[in-house]
Amino acid sequence: MSRITECAASLVGASNIRLNHRVDRIAYKEDGKVELTAKGFHQTRTETFDAVVLATPPSALHSIIDRPRWSFMKEQAIRGSHYEPLTKIGLHFRTRFWERSTVNPCFGGQSTTDLRFRWIVYPSNDLGNNGSGVLLLYCWMSDASKWAGLPRDERIRVCLHDLARYYADEPEVDVYEQYIEAFDVIWNGQSAQGDAMFLPGQFSRFFEVAKKNEGNVHFAGEHLSKHHTWIAGAVDSALHTTAEILGRPVQGEATKTSLATEQTPPLSPLGREYLTLDDQRRAQRTDISSCRFSSCVIPKHMNVQYVEVF
Image (cartoon, rainbow, N blue to C red; front, side, top):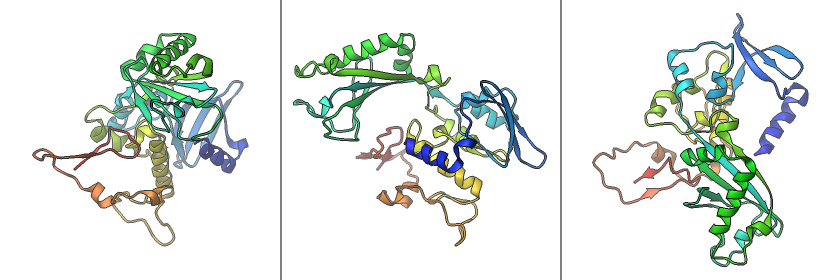
């Protein structure tokens, strides 16, 4: 996914990108443009833009010192959108031993455990490669909170211990001998929140108002999509916000007025041509209050928060 940001950077130009600058002021100009003030290590910069996209989680937006106060419900969404702690640990090993397992070889996908890390995510790239590989260990919610109090070395030691237990039935697998290095991120400790996980009722209450633009200030992020915690949600939100700025609809989204013309066709998400599910059937609302269903369809992205019932 880094190729997306690298491509965007090449279009914008490196000279127009400011790293390690903290925005501490947002102000509207009389002509509708937006003025930002950002502090870097050695200087403070103030610049004016035709439009601004705030692609930050609510906690970062809430901490901007001097910004406009928007509508009551917008401010409620910024303060009240629920986030859960999230911990991810990547373990780099000498070989992709999980693919060569004689008991349960894994080629992509994930396993759920009752160990102190709850999910093992197996990479789906370079399948069958003879080189090194990375396993990702995930924890959410209260499980993730428990890791925050441990020093980094202790977190890695516990992960290796539990992973060795997970592969205890396979004597040919020695995770300690295979181990090279680790990289871990405790999102709730390093990004002030974690991952978006709206509580019951928050989608209907906050979702539309949270992603609505305020003049020439626009908002984006995976928390403003229906695919929380997934890069797919970030891409969906980016597509929606880009279309909003350009005044063009997004293919497949309902619009109050048809803006699509021969000159301004709707933006189409990349990969949409591979979807096989009928959009009209997906859009149908089903009253499940008095029906008995025989099956559930889990979407391909495996985010079980969003399940279609038939």
